[in-house]
Length: 82
Image: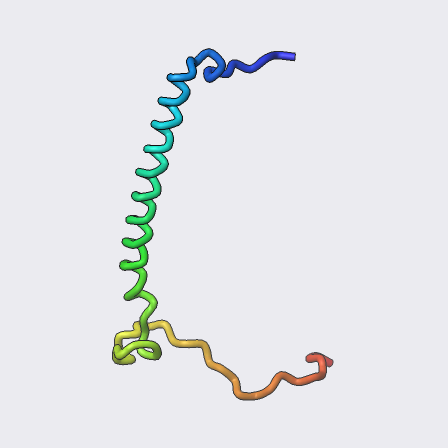
């Protein structure tokens, strides 16, 4: 069985603590960056989710996509086909 090299086995306790502290700082920075990017994404997606039925925009601003028609008929109990 081949033993894998583990660089942390050779590090001193102080070096390990410094490395852990560095990783904690990196995690905090990445979490802050993630929060900023999520806020930016929300800001960019918010206007895209609006249309004339859920805002005060006119129907002409909805674009070419038409909403799917909704049937008022109830679905039959019988199976379709012959």
